[in-house]
Length: 180
Image (tube, rainbow, N blue to C red; front, side, top):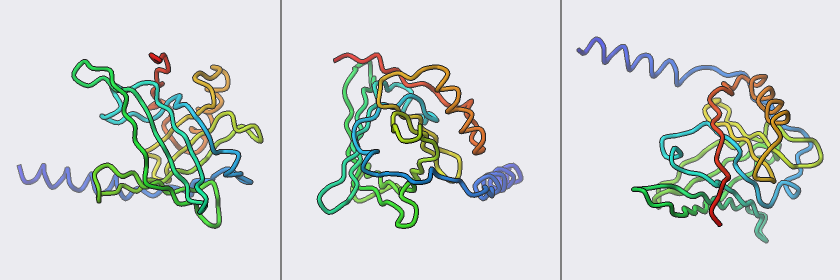
């Protein structure tokens, strides 16, 4: 039994130390144009996301130029469809590359989880859709200013993800069929 436990631990260590090529972000990123309301079109799903829909996020800069990320979704817990709102404490913007953010997700104070939030795809100057990823390729999000996105555009976004070595087959669409 100890042999199998040792093998498992070694495999976990190998997979967690996997080397990734540098993840390129979009150039000439305008933080101010990115601010505002976005819908989550799809993402790599975690166990907490299975019963959630209508996921939306709002980005704002406060007067001190600190970035706030407010997230809202509706989750079915124990057969109850209820809103879940989460306001991240803050996000830091890389001083050299404004498309590289570090988001601090405050679940239980004072525990704060740190996540890469790198803008790796964008529709040029329009800022109508965005592809967000992490350098370890474990997080991927497709965002849109609208609740839905054209299938051709979505497939092009997935091609960008593949080109950056993300397994886009793991993307799960988020239902935006929301009760208002």
